[in-house]
Length: 421
Image (cartoon, rainbow, N blue to C red):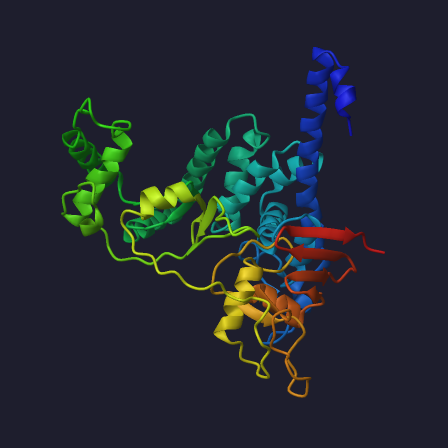
């Protein structure tokens, strides 16, 4: 790898040539990941697995008709690539489809001339197509899979090729979209903000947008010279206008009458000297400042103060069922899925015994330090696969993959510990 000193000694032409080399190396490396995923899928075929519960199963990652693979294979590959098992499964799905359904793009991947993102997008957008339809899209877009046009333009090219190759599917997708036109997605954007996405046909959305803008303009009031603080922005007036439209309630500085009753969990912290930290966390949103809590929630919310949960003082129990107080403590110690590079943060994960519960086991098997939250898929990998895990200290997990590589997982993330022997 070129050092900072080496770069500092280069002239303009050398720096630009070095940038070109890095881009080429990165392109070849990303194509190489696709090829490795193809080889890994071939090395872990699903046809050798027997059907039935409680075992590793054969799964169809790619399009119908492509080879199946072993259910737990993506997790092992994903950990080596420092990605979640879900991302590993997506990579393998795209790689399988490229190999078996997109021969022209496969050729560019093998020579390192494809942009891997572009190649994978074609695989994703053609997954529902027949082999013949996918081949038509492959032929139509292969000339620009190298990244010679911008990403947005490429998305449009692929979308057009899919419609041309599979018009019946395009019509069905349009019908499905109309049937699920209204969709609420509360995106976590940070800084105390969230997003509401409303989907509908172009005409309806245009009407909604025009109505909100017209009402926002009527809400505009010139700032009085004695008024403190900045004047209300157009975006702020749009939010007020939308609130009036959906609640049929005029807005004013006290908006409590227009707001539904909701419950938020806000966590605040103190340092060893008892001083309150400047950062709080809102469940389902993330970190906010205390100033935000005061300005946004303080004027419109009632707060219930609850005692601090004694995480380490939770008494073990002699039962397989995990008490609610243990579940809360585990989520305080370990907020994310404990599998290497996993990213799930939801509250509906399984809370698994790290050392499996045994009817004839010692007392206190259900205890803090023997739990870990996991998605059901990762729970299955731990239970029925060849992965092993230990928890030497509460919240510290040591995983061993089927090839003997170890991963340390804690609240800071995942770190591989050593290469396979």
